[in-house]
Image 1 (cartoon, rainbow over the protein chains, first blue to last red):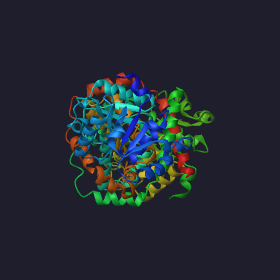
Image 2 (cartoon, chains in turn green, red; image 1 turned 120 degrees about the horizontal axis):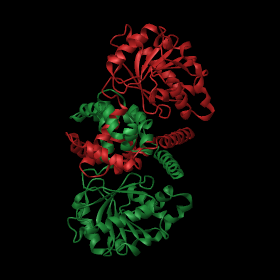
Image 3 (spheres, chains in turn red, purple; image 1 turned 90 degrees about the horizontal axis):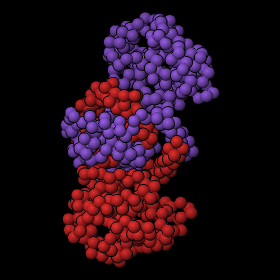
Image 4 (cartoon, rainbow over the protein chains, first blue to last red; image 1 turned 180 degrees about the vertical axis):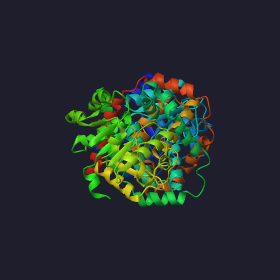
Length: 309
Length: 309
């Protein structure tokens, strides 16, 4: 199953929203022939939209490739010769179960099916499929053309070979696919991030700090630290020779104190208005292009330094 | 109160552990005269220890300064001419209340008192002081000579002028002091970080991912993202023109689903052995020097890019 399909993959993106186009940018930087990329969407202005948006995100040397991408508004023809079909449609179980059943009828028998969903597990999406073994979640961290992480979340019925092919595809492209062993609400990256967000909401609601102060704290402490060494590795280092165990022996009391203080129903109703207001007033509209440019440089510096070792 | 004390501060560090020496490194890069820095500790090998450790963390051009630092094993003389006394002794209320009472007897009347504690609020530390108005917590993110954040946590009895002087001191040195408005368990940075750690522990204990996978996920997603734009700013951007409110309108269901799934007593007993074992096996001993070198470069790149704007 592994060999010839992916050496010259034909990729069809189902859904041309922000995430779809970001994946298009990523794929175009690795495909030998841009016409091997198909973008399917039912929006009537698909061509204008893709041709005006895509080149903005491509490196200048690749901008002209956008014109050679294959655009499609008919699903059967969009998927009929694809080796990989990557879906980022509405976050809606009915939409996804329907579209996978259609795709299955028209796609080649060995094509891989990937959903970019942030919340609907493959086991729910495959409910109407004859053969759910080739469907799995490939959940990006936005935007995927910048961020290396891809959460690979098979259902219990996904074939191990489909997972292996998926991992090989992303590793070849220098990305970081991580297999999530159980389908759980929100998968892993969002669960981790939302746990911190929740504590931030709680502290803002309590008047301990403002929204902007939470961000400033994260940007000047755990953000840069965790970009280089994740939380377990960092606290393991923090324990010196005794590692994580020594870390917990030393300050486990404070850790558990924080967990107990924040573990209850501490984020109830009524925090929204204040948190939304503070965020709006602090930031207005965020310059996402600048954020992504700086994030790219951060990732480049880390890769360069880690390889230097 | 603001003017002449801090223009040529005389700083006494109480406690020469890892944090004390890291602060020494930071101060030495900003003091016009290294003999204005005093390191007090009762360890018998203080001089050998400081002279062998400090130069390793100083930039090569500053390494010789270590020899000119004033070392002291007698508290009254160590603090008698200091304008700032910065304590990083044992995390023990009795130790801290005792030592501040002694320091108060021997220090100049206008000296500022800073504790680096990660858990004992200034209001508890000042219990035996005559005048608690000049004591506050200045909690670093380790190591302080690398990480910009300083959590400034006054007690209700700390004078506003003492807070202002502290903020001015750190801002002049290009650091990021953030005032925490209420003394709460663990202050803010650790509470945020520990909330994410707790969810990580939970997911490892449930067998969803390994310790190493949690770290890899964080290092390739929210780490680099949050180094550039903290969580509120990022989710505000994620909501497009509608901002954070639109973000919650779109995927608030998943956010709350994650909160509910992780909000209960999900980290009970018995996770430690497995988590410690995985961490030990994944990392052995962490190369902290490399981590800090890369973190510095990440911070430099971010500062450079943000200034470029």
